[in-house]
Every structure is written in structure tokens, then in C-alpha cells.
Image (cartoon, rainbow, N blue to C red; front, side, top):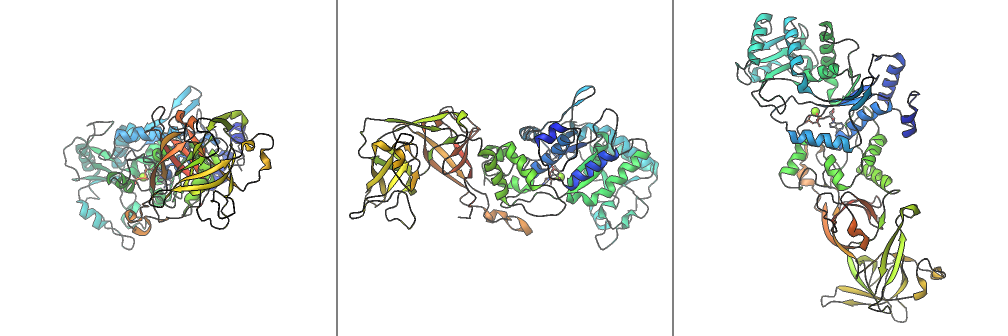
Amino acid sequence: MSNDKKNPASAAALPALPSNFLRAIIENDLAAGTHTRDGMPNVITRFPPEPNGYLHVGHAKSICLNFGLARDYNGRCHLRFDDTNPEKEEQEYVDTIIDSVKWLGFDWNWQGPNGNEVHLHHASDYFDQLYTMAEYLINEGYAYVDSQSAEEMAANRGNFNTPGVNSPFRNRPREESLQMFRDMKAGKYKDGEHILRAKISEDAMSSPNMNMRDPAIYRIRHEHHVRTGDDWCIYPMYDYTHPISDALENITHSICTLEFQDHRPFYDWLLETLSKGGFFTLPVPKQYEFSRLNLTYVITSKRKLRQLVEDGVVTGWDDPRMPTIVGLRRRGYTPESIQLFAERIGVTKSDGWIDMSTLEGCVREDLDPKAPRATAVLRPLKLIVENFPADASEPCSCPVHPHHPEMGVRNFTFTRELWIEADDFMETPTKGYFRYTPPVGDQPGSRVRLRHGFVTECTGYDKDDNGNVIAVRVKYFEDSKSGTPGSDNYKVKGNIHWVSAADCLEAEVRLYDRLFTDPQPDAGGKDFMAALNPNALETVTAYLEPGMKDAAGDQRFQFERHGYFVADRVDSQPGKPVFNRIVTLKDSWTAK
Ligand code: ATP
Ligand code: MG
């Protein structure tokens, strides 16, 4: 439980917050006053994406965690682009990341003593400072310019079992390294000709931690950078840039995924060393690791997601089958459902798999109380009400939401010709089937209530020349209309949905399903392309109740008996919505 008494509002918004090891660390720090500094909150976190792709559901976990902790402890969270790889980074990615974080419900503004502060940062904002600190490290004997080839460097690094070998350039005089580093910056060398490496200790090349073996901190890249243009031809490495950016931004808790655990000693060494040089005041940020999200039936590697896009397996990064945030959004997931998911899965330090049904359960749980209900016939079969006049129509209505009368009513008409689901009729019924079945001998056909309409009795059916059932015939009972006195004298076991053939809306409905049939499509180096679900998308022409023509992009509904659907934000036109299935009503998934 959070014991943050200073912030009753956020505690009320999120009752009974489950504790986790990160909350415990933060609460200890709050109690000890570890990060008490003037004009700053006690908790400052950050989300540091590299703008080289679209964010996915794994990033969503990290966003909800970092921004969520800042929210819950009255702190702030920075969005920082880790833009140190000019060749892979693009503005398109920066824009979509900003959009995605906002859509998830977070922002980087902070109301400080001097008003609003905007904490949207870029590592490239710090290129000058990063460079100055590198010169400091060289001057202090903590860094040197190495002139080995990439192959020599790799060979001399050793491996887990073999210590590394010192570079022949390791004892290059400081003045010489400094001059060469300046020449690297001035563009006098080609890519890869030299590199700046840290020298953590005399025997660092035999450290059991490979990340401590003279890690590279600057490399030459003659590349145009999205933000700094051609100002630089040397770029700092991630492991060097990240701790410094954290410290410059006064981050208190630098939270990352477990693969960075072995990078932590360098993180700590670098900040401690630079603090001695007067670049930072204590306390410097501390790094904490949690386990990344692995979700079944999903891949969360940017590289593999890009392959799905580039190979045309999906229509784009925002294809509703993609686990990207833009894909989940277009699929119809709500920000609230993703936040709920992040809370529910919690954070730990142990690797595991979360079942896709957990995410699906969260969107059902979020939408059930708020999604308007609607009727959609996805696989239509004609129903003919033989004793209802062809030119008549009977107005019917029902609540928009069964538990929220304030949401109003839906209106539609009952006519002689209706559409029902094809599987609501069975010529030869199986045991326990309570929907339409035809008369057999003296036995009348089954009685079924047409929801919010009338009770009907099956009188027969029509087939085409190929033996396919093309229409079901029924008679209706005039005194059985739902909501009228005496209507419940009719006891029927079947209760189905329908729309009027005379006034329904024809619409494209996309029945999305999981993208893979294998719960761990890329585990153990498996070929994930071989596990694609051929039924991940089925497009049907459905008949919907007439009011649905006004559905606007991003509006979500529960199509009764089917599941939750959203009007596609890209393809819907005014008066002509296209719907995506978000999730079925029940968790009954099996690979077809
Ligand atoms: P890359 O291989 O391009 O570095 P990445 O997925 O690590 O890919 P980043 O942009 O570096 O992408 O990630 C930003 C943040 O999101 C990092 O702090 C990272 O730890 C976190 N993150 C990435 N994937 C997951 C995941 N599956 N679960 C939780 N957090 C994740
Ligand atoms: Mg990364």
C-alpha cells in the first residue's frame, strides 16, 4: 500500500495500489529524504525511447510504470528521446511516440514553483555537455582514444570465460588522446578509424563484467542528425549518454528493463566520477531494473515488427493486429484498459509470460460499463415473418445500456423481413439447441424471442438449388411484444438478436483475431512468420441497427452476443462507418 499521505487525491484515484519493489524503494527514499532538493519533486522518473520505431505494448508497460509512479508520488516524469543513433532515427518516430504517450493519458508538464515546466527532452540537447565531460575524462586519465580496428577490438575484448587484452593504445598520453578526440570532432577521420573508450581501472579489461572492459563512449559517424544536422560527426554511445542525461535532468529513480542490470556498474562509476569533477551534485540518480513484458501471441521486438510491416503481412504500423500502441488504439483498445493492464500485471524482477487473455480481459472490463450496446448481424440469414404485413412496420426500442438508463434508448423497427445470424437456425438441431428449428411431423417449430421485439415460431425454411438455407419462415404473436403487458406469458428458451431488412445499415466489419497461433511465436529463435494466424482477419458485410450510421471513428460499442467493436478511425466515412472487432465477449480463444 502506498503511504503517501501528502497526496490524498492520487491515492483516492487509485485505491488499494498494489505494492511492488519499486514503490518500496521510493517510499524508503521519501521517508529518508534521499532526494529532497529545492524546487524539485522527490520523485523524478523518465521514459527514454529511442526514436527508431513505433512504441509497442511493452513500452506501454514502461510508460505506465514511469509516469504512473510520478503521478502517484506527486513527482514528474520526463519524456526523453534517446537520439544518439542518427542513421536509424526519424522525425516520424518522434511524432508517433509523443502521440502515443499523450494518448495513453500522460504528459510531461510539471507545475513547479516557477510555473509550468515542460519536460520533453532529447539526449541531443546535451551533446555539448556530453562532449565537455568526455574531455574531462580524458584529462583525468579515465578515457583514451583507441585506434584498433573494430575486429581487433572485438577480439581483444575477450568473452565471459576469457579476460580481455589491453589495447596497445591504452596508455596513449592524455594530451595525445585529447588532441585526437578534438580531431575526431573536427571531422579529420573516417567512420571507425578511432573511438573513445573509458578506462575505469587499470585492470578493467579483465573485469568479469564485459560492460566494464573499456566501454566505447564516443564513435565517429559522418551522419546527418534529425535535430543537430551536421554539427557533429562524433556521437556518444547509449551507455555513456543515458546516465549523464539522467543526472542532468535530476532524475531520482532511473527505471529500466533487466537487460541493463550489467550496465549498472558503469552507470554508477560514470556518475560518481563526473560528480568528483563537479559536473553533478549528489545524490546522483540510481538505476533500478524490472522484467520486461512478454505477452503471449505477441512479438515485441521492433525489428520483427518492422519486418511484418515491410513484408506486407499487415497494412502498416497501425494495423489493428499489431501490438503497437497505434495498432492497439486503432483496434479499439482504450488508454484506460492499457493502464489497467499495466497495474494488473505489476512489476517484478523475474521473467515470465503474461497471457494475452489478461490484456483482453482488461478491455472488456473497461468497456462493459461504458460501451453503448448495438445490434449487428454478422453472418446474415433472411427471416420472413409470414403473418406480418409487407408494408407495415412496428417501432421498437431498448436501452442503450442495460445498467445506465441515463444513456437513453435505441429505436428500430420490426418489419416482415428481418436479418438474423445464420447459426440461429438449425435444420436438424443438436441436443440443447434452443434457437430456430423447423417443424417436424406434428411437432411445431421452435419458439424464439426476437429480442426487444416479438415471440415467433418457426414455420419452415427455404433452400436454394444447392441445398443452402436461404430463408427461415416464422409467424409472430402479436401480443408478445417485449415490454407490453402479458408479453412474459410466452416462455421461450431462445432469445436472439435481429435487424430489419428494410431499414438496417450495411457495413464492413473486420473480425480481428490474434496475429499468431503460437503463444510464443519467436521464443528460442523460432521463425515467427511460420506461426502467423491465417484467420487473424476476416472481413464480413454485416447488417446493423439503423442508428449505427452515425457512429464516428473511435466510437466503441458492444455488439450484443458478439463482443466489443470500434468504428475504424481511418476508414470510417460520415454515414458509412467501418467496424473493427476489439475482442469477443468471452474468453474462449482457441487457434482455428
Ligand atoms: P531497441 O532494441 O531499439 O533499443 P527497445 O524496445 O529497448 O528497442 P527503446 O526505445 O530503447 O526500445 O525502449 C524505451 C524503453 O522501453 C526502455 O526503457 C526499455 O527498457 C523499455 N521497454 C522496451 N521494451 C519493453 C518491454 N517489452 N517491456 C517493458 N519495457 C520495455
Ligand atoms: Mg533500448
